[in-house]
Length: 532
Image 1: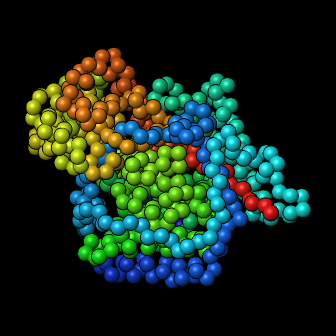
Image 2: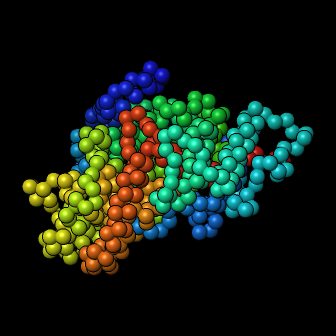
């Protein structure tokens, strides 16, 4: 079991201690070891799992347009999209085996039928407040310890909501490390207050059930690195609580990248079934052992996945897909991603599992190349891009394969703009790489909710171009005044801190920004007991 000694070792060691080596074994052995305990436990669900819940949750502090009604926060909705199709190669490289091609064609199997109380959804202006008579229990009812703890937690969240709403009436709060300011934020004052409230109040309960390598572990040295990095850091974080009664959110610590690597087998009729069964059995186990999943229908639980198949595996359990907070790299609003409920996280390719060497960039006037892209033919956008611009113009450096005498990162550092098109899926590490190296991202995307779009104003430090505008891309970029370009470059350097990965998490870095986005979604939910 994990303990404080393990945490101290993990925080002081290299990535090999942060993310345990992924063991290799035969497919049948791995599948048996992983699934057998869960299958045995899942058999108890039909006998012992509660058929109904006496809890309700009220969701939606957002209006119908997706704008949070804690005024100032606007989650990303339909807009730009990014992606990268280089999945099979990277997955094979990161796990030493397994090449994947294509997505198994199968829809999610439903969880066993459960009789549930209806869920109430209301806008913020109609939502129940914890300080009126609606949530007050009848005087004849004795409040149990569990109920009083929940009311205490919700009252604390109500205080946080009030503090955030009132932040606009005050000046900046003193902060010795960093004070958010400027147009890179949708509302810097509200973000700062919300972040400080998160630091004071957020408690995460990490379920300890599940064994490595599927649970409590993940990749740390590939495009899926945020899965392993987040898991290793949250388990040693000051935000973690060992007492679930004090938790505001509950983390389901399974790695989709690990599930795909160790359980996926393409030469079987139903390729999804073993992977989805793993997720179903795990949630069933937790629902039997603890009361917390059933009391909220999973609405105060969250999963985190950077693998492209994360959204599909979340459909393994209907409540997980519809109610839970899903922190996803593949944040595609056309595939069920809900910005008011789910969290868009960045895809970060940590070569060797570390960030040093990726940061830093020349000044704006020391970048002779107008725009740069290098990447394979993945998805519908890149063929159009390469057809129009590959080897056509020295100012527009577009390559399918980068010449041997060119360095990918060096080209980024020499370019004013870096193209970040979608691939087969919307997630791509190119946006973060561009920000790391001071190159203004050019986003050519659809249906993509950009990372931390509830706080960050992406239009202030990036350029959006539609697919139809690709032939005119050079004219569009040349028409941007130098003064505006310099401002975008400066803002990109400023916003970079929110995407940095640190061995020991630092305030406002990608780990804390991910937690803050989850915190905002928890503020968007009210849990209360049904009386009667």
